[in-house]
Length: 87
Image 1 (cartoon, one colour):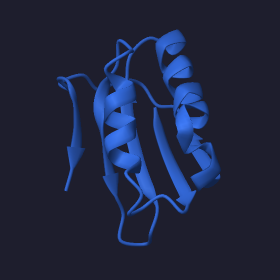
Image 2: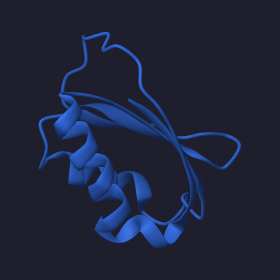
Image 3: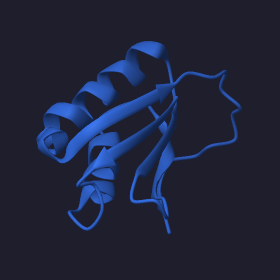
Image 4: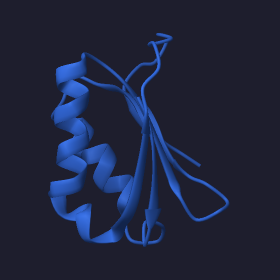
């Protein structure tokens, strides 16, 4: 799953909060700021875990910062371990 978030999502602890939320789900992946002001979240896991994680991002205190969420579902590539903040 790849999600691009736009709104007031940089400089507000968005990536840290997403990483903290990820610890509660069986997902692997990363989150990073994009040069255009959006944040990109990439995650792999079961569809149920990914949907629950996606909902937690919206309801876990970040929803007010998100103006738009663009999700794309692709087959898992594997090779991801843990959940990291990319710089």
